[in-house]
Amino acid sequence: MAEPAKDLGVAPGGNRIGPRDCQPRSAPAVSGIGTGLTGISLERRDGCVCIRLARGEANALTTSLIRELADAVEEAGQGARGSLLAGGGRFFSNGVDLDWALGESRESIREMFLELGRLILALLEAPAPVVGAIRGHAIGAGLAMFLACDYRYAAAGRVLIGKPEILLGVPNPYYGDRLLRFVAGDFAASDLIYSGRLIHAEKGRSLGLVHETGPKAEIEDMAWEKLLSLCDLAPAAFAESKRMRLGRFCADLREQMPARVARQTELWHSDDAQTRLREAAERLRRRTAG
Image (cartoon, rainbow, N blue to C red):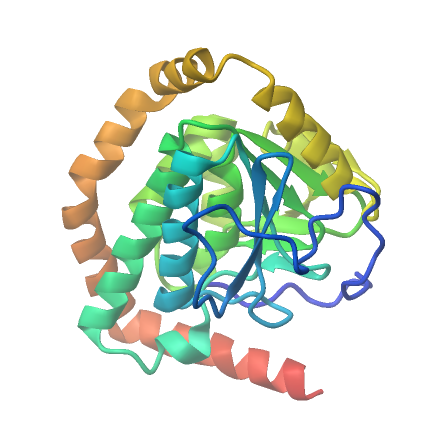
């Protein structure tokens, strides 16, 4: 649900990741996962699974992509020691695909927000560790996915994160708002939500949104090593510790979601929001064409 970050010199993908590179290749997927996928790629290593967004440069989200991600996270949680969530070299994800969303019906948009909520809950409730690794921008719903990971690694430099929904005439979805406040605290989260500003990953680290930053060519290696260290912990103890931390939070999200999504859908289709969203989509088209 965001315009792409302006080109600040972030190189497109293709950086070398190193010996534990989880770029898609012919390695087998975790049993039961990986057939018929169109917007993500999966790879198994060391009993873990790398779930990578792979829908063009921006990894803009549609309902089908969100559903693929949620299904993969839920299935990996049952059959893998842990999961690494990753994206592309320029964008982890730029949020909702505006061009796609503006052509969808009210019911389709409601379904999209419900599926996004399911994805966030799947990440938060995964019993096995989930580590996020971003080499590129994480905007809007892209940041929400990243924040739902147990540990978060981001490339240093001109990698931007933020929640600019308010600039497009719509509020954050309830789960995105609550998650940002849960992770960063009300003071910092309110500033990011009300301003819609984007910040660099290093600033995100100072606010508690990012655990570690590092060179772009190494950040996924760093995240993978962290994932493997978490997988060495007693699985039942880790899962129960996570439930104690997030159980009430997730219960609130699940209880509130139907009514909050209904309101979000209503606001999305307001005249003001539709005007702002269409203007943002047009700016994106001009920027892409240029």
